[in-house]
Structure formats: structure tokens, C-alpha cells
Image 1: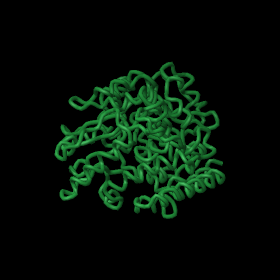
Image 2: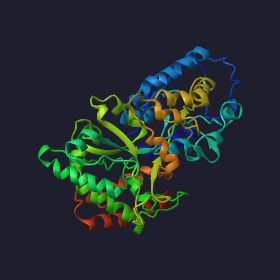
Image 3: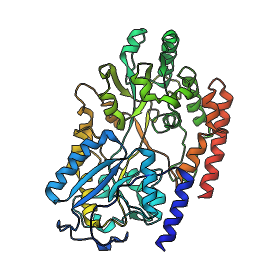
Image 4: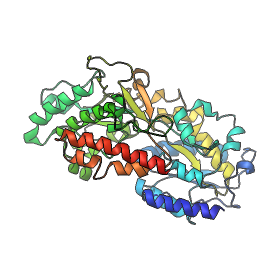
Length: 451
């Protein structure tokens, strides 16, 4: 019974995090189920006059609304792109699942996709995709396609993908006479520069580096994989986070944290705010945040270079597999009970078709989920070179953001006392970090066994 599945989903979500996304379908018509056998011909004969679209990123709203408005011109159906902040997004979506209004079209994320797919909350897209000449799942990043597929059924189409780069404030480097980062930097170079700036800037309250340890995708995950470890293996059945390779990556992170601004301050203010306030010389960040820094007051001082490589063998050169970047991707999904499933799918198809994926990159919304359609993102920001995000796909190795069936169960536990939190709060002790890796191995293995 669908009601039992929905109840199970609500219980699962409550265990994971406060979820959200609301809005509510403004379309009229008869409620449908997640069975895509009801797919219409796609000839534009819609019962809906408008669709509600929910996202959580203000930086992407204007560009996505522009693309949606172009669909409205061809379909006659308005699509209103609403921004709901991350926490409330999932809380409101949970409320919609339990009987409230759900948006017609919305984003899915790797942390929660599996729970939604397994509980008949998302529209089954298989028949719609099969009848759509514009969508071929082979054209999208494989990891993202697989993420939004459950037991052979596709529940979302890849919206985008992202990579990680190093951002630095040239004015700070110039102020303290430190050479600026380049695409050839290793994590050892980052440590050397961060140490020099933190020491020279002590009287001014300026630090060489800041890392938000709660943001694993744009931070410490990359060091683990760069040094040869894995948070989750490729088939999602195990981990090597307690291995010597992973410990080498986390030891480098520990040393960088020693000369970085402290974690309580990061938790209170955030790395991005600290950076734009002129107190931090370097951070790592994802391509989804470029717009934030591009529009900041002192953006002329901000420069991006490729994510540093892990000189694991100490030979001073970047060998294959040493420069890595995590990547992730959102998916466009539709509610199982949207009043006009064909209209909802056709909007998803529009967002994800090649031309609109190119447009998304050209507008600087984000990089595309369609392979080969996102190169324009590198030149989308006049006066700011963001090619570091696209170059890493040729110069380095991408790994998909680690996930399992219930990602947040172990992901949240890794950040608590008894695991990495102890080492993050006291980065002076190498033994704490090593022990945290061992504890993390057990936590992840136990969580996978319980799935």
C-alpha cells in the first residue's frame, strides 16, 4: 500500500535530517500515481495552466526561471521557480509526502534520493523518457544517472554536475609577500602558503586557509581520494577510510587545519563569509558557488585554480590519480501525484535537453549534467576565469560523491564526537586523526550492514 510506504518514508526521513520542499501543485485535474503508463502523447495538450518548481539555491533562480519562461512560450504552461532554503526545502517536502501539497517539479539530491525512490513518492519517468527524442540517458554523467535509478526505474533526469577548485584572495597573498597558487600546486604547497600567511597575518586576524569540515564534498573527501583511499567503494558495499592511504590524506588535512582558522569560528560564520570578509586567503569550493563570489564586493581580488594534487609518492609531480575532484549532480524529479504528469515531465525534459543544458552553462547557472554541454560555463563570468572547474575533468580524475542507501546515517555520525569531530577541534594531535579514521571505518561498515 502506498500509504504504508509513505509512512515508512516519513519515519526514515525523521531519522536522517529535517527535510523540506513545498509549494504545492497549482495544476488542476485528477491525481495520478507514479505509474508512467499514464504518459500522454506529449503534444502539448496539458490540463495544467501552471507548474510549481522548487529549488534551494538563490544563485540559480534567475537563470532557471529564464529557461522555464522559454518553455512557457512553447507550452502555454507557466512554471514558477521558487527558492526554499536547504533545511526548509526538505522539511516542506516531507510535509508534502505526509499529505500536504508537493511541488510539481523539484530537485533531488544524493543524500535522500534512495528513500524517495523506494517509497513511490517520485513519478516513474521510464515511459516518458522512452517516448522522448530529446532525452537519452546515455548522454548524461553515468554516476548521476545511476544515482537516480532504483531497480531499473529512472526517477530523475540529471540536471547538472559540479567539480571542486581552489579559490584564493590575491590581495592577501600580495599583502604578506607569498607567491599565489597555480594549477601546479600540491596540497603540500597549500600547507606551506597557509602556514606563511597565518603567521604573517596573526596581528591582523588573517588566516591562510579555512575548511568547513561539515562540507565534505568540497573539502576533505578530496584529500582521502587523492591519497588513494575511498570513503565508499565503487559498488557501495564497503569503505577504506581506515586504510593507510586514507590516513595519509586526513593527516595532510590535519596539518592544514593546524594553520587554519578554528572550526568553532567556521561553524558560526562559514568559510564563504569569512573569505569575502578578507580574513581568509584560500578555500576550496564547488562550481555551484561561483555566482556568490563573482558578485561579491571584492571579486576582482578572487581567482580560481585547479584543486591541488596529492603528492602521495613525494616525487614533486602530479601523477595520474593524484589530482582528484569529487563531483555530484542534482536531478530534476516530479511528484508522483502531480496533477499533470506529462506537463511536469515535459518541463524536466526541457531543462535537461542539450540546448537548454548549454544555455544553463552559458548563463552561469551551473555546469551541465549532459556530457559535453557545459564547456561554456568556463567563460560565463566576464572578468573571472573559472576554467579550473572544467580543466580538472581532463587534468585530473573525478570521483562521484560517496553514497549508499542511507548516506546520512553514517555521514552524520562521522562528524560527531567519537569520530572526526574530536580531531577537527584539536588538530594538534596526529593520533586523534588516525583513531578517527579507524572509528569511521567501523561506523560506515556497520551502517552499510544495517541497510
